[in-house]
Length: 138
Image 1 (tube, helix red, strand yellow):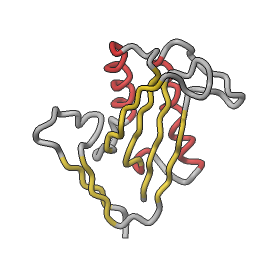
Image 2 (image 1 turned 135 degrees about the vertical axis):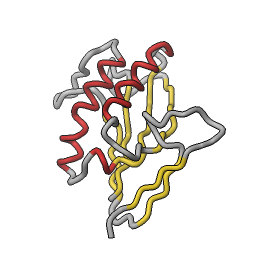
Image 3 (image 1 turned 90 degrees about the vertical axis):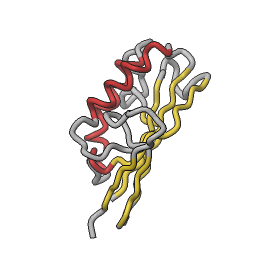
Image 4 (image 1 turned 135 degrees about the horizontal axis):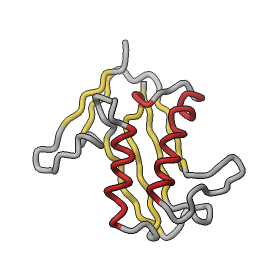
């Protein structure tokens, strides 16, 4: 049987349906794939767009389809996204960052659930401002 995803709204929360589902029921899961710590770096570990969290997010999500395909998954298989920002990311940038992610997910009928947004002092590579973890199921 194929994976069935059912999104559930949260009546007491704001409508973020363009970006994420408040809750999700998964049935018939045969595989779970976790992609951790995806940052805006090249193969040599050099951070792209230092100082610009929005551009780093755009760079990351442009890479995600190919990255997932290498493991046999697609964007429609993402069921949860975890967000990690450094303290250097201005709160005023959050809306623009989330707009990039919403654009990335625009074609998906059932959006992934939102994971925790963590704000940390620093990430593993200098000038890395954002990092995303993806949970995929099928």
